[in-house]
Image (cartoon, rainbow, N blue to C red):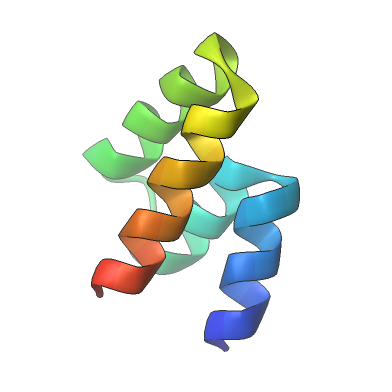
Length: 52
């Protein structure tokens, strides 16, 4: 399941975070980071997935 989350994080970062934590603060932070820059959104998403 982590592989699916990481692949989702690479292509659609908020989806990877949503699959891991739901609609919490990390999801909204990731939405913001993805809008500000795609790469920060990916880094944040992979970090959230790897952390848990």
